[in-house]
Amino acid sequence: MNGTILISGAGVTGLALAYWLDRAGFSTTLVERSPEFRRGGQAIDIRGVALDVTEAMGLLDAARDLRTQLKGMSTLDADGNEKERTEERTFSAGRLDSDDIELFRDDLCELLMSALSERVEILYDDSIRSVDDRGDRVFVTFASGASKDFDLLVGADGVYSNVRKQVFDNEASVVFPLGVVLALFSTPNLINLGDWQLGLREDGIGYVVYPSRDKSELRVGVGFGAPDTPLSRNDTEAQKRLIAEQCAHLKGDFPRFLEAMKTTDQFYFNELAQIRMPSWSKGRVVLAGDAAYCASPFSGQGTSLGLVGALVLARALEQHWNDLPQAFAAYEQRMRPYVDLNQGIVDLTRNGPVPDEQLTEAKNGIDISDLLRETK
Ligand SMILES: Cc1cc2nc3c(=O)[nH]c(=O)nc-3n(C[C@H](O)[C@H](O)[C@H](O)COP(=O)(O)OP(=O)(O)OC[C@H]3O[C@@H](n4cnc5c(N)ncnc54)[C@H](O)[C@@H]3O)c2cc1C
Image (cartoon, rainbow, N blue to C red; front, side, top):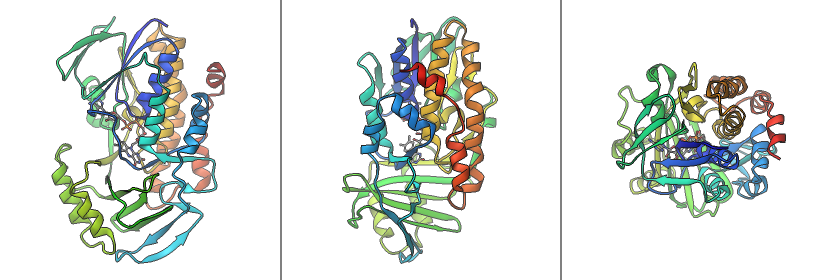
C-alpha cells in the first residue's frame, strides 16, 4: 500500500495501529509526547474479541506470560483493617477464573513495541502544534519546529486528545466528565506485598494497591470526586496536594504511600470522562481509541476497544484507501455498536463491579472474524 500516515500517541491504540498499517505497507510514523517509552500505570485488561486481535498479532502467549497473576484481594476499612478477603476476584481484573488477560499497561505497550518493524518511525518528546488539512494532503507542524505532510493523520493520543482539540470544532460537547479524578502512582514495595491486591471503596473515595510484576514496586490507584475548579493538567504538585488532602483520613499503611508519592516520577492524574462523538473523522484526519471513544477505566474495556479499533481502522484504510470517506464509514459502522455497548456498562460500575453477563456481552460485542481471517 502506498501512503504516508502519521499517528499521534504511542499508547496501546497507536502502537497496535502502527503494527497493522506497517504490515499493510503504509509508511507509518508515530509521534509521542513523552520523552521516552513511558512506564507506570496500573493493570489493564485484554478481553473478549481483543484476545483474538492479540492472537492475530502473534502476541497472545507472550501477553499471557505477562499477566499480573494476583491471587485475590482484601477490602480494607479507612483504618487499614481487613473487612473481607476473596480469592475469586480482584478490584482491577474482576473474576479470576476468566480467560481475560490482566497485565500492566507498560508491559503491554512494551510488547506491542517489540512487534513493530524497524520501518515504523517513532518520534519521542514531540507533539503536533498545528494541522493544516489541504484536502489532498495534511500538513503538520511539530512542537520541535519540524514540519511535514502526510496522506492521513490519526489521533490516538488519549482521552484529552491533542488532535481532536486541534481539528474537530465541537471539542467541549464530546467530553462527558464522570465527576471523578483518577490518580495513579508507583512507590517502592514498602509493605512487601506479594500476589495480592488491597483496596478500599467507601463513599466518595476508593483506592487499590498491588505490586508490579517483579514485586519491586507498588502501583497505587486512588479515585475521588473531581474538585469544582479543575486543576491545571500540568501542575503535578497541586495534583499531589489534592490527593494528600483527600486521603488524609486513611490510616494503616496509606500515609506511607502518600509520603512516597511526593517523590515518585511515575505519576498520572486525570479527570475521568467518556468521549462520545457524532463522527470520528474529518477530512484527512481520523481518531482512534480513547481519543475517539473513551469508555473510561470504569468500563475496564479501554484497552480492548483500542486494540480492536486499531485493526478495524487499519483494514478499512487498506480496503478503501482511494476513498477515505468510505474507509471511515466502514470503520465507524463496524465499531460503533461495540463502542456503545461498552460505554453503556459504565453507569452500572461506578459503585461496584460490572455484572458478569453484561461484561461478557460487551467484550464480545463485535464480529471481526472476516478481518481476522484476512490477516492470516
Ligand atoms: C500513563 C497512563 C496510565 C494509564 N493507566 C491506566 C490504568 O491504570 N487503568 C486503566 O484502565 N487505564 C489506564 N490508562 C488508559 C488506558 O491505557 C487506555 O484507556 C487504553 O489503553 C486505550 O489507550 P489509548 O492508546 O487509546 O490511549 P492512552 O493509553 O491514553 O495513550 C495515549 C498516548 O498518547 C500520548 N499523547 C498524549 N497527548 C499527546 C500529544 N499531544 N502528542 C503526542 N502524544 C500524546 C500519551 O503519552 C500516550 O502514550 C492509562 C493511560 C496512560 C497514558
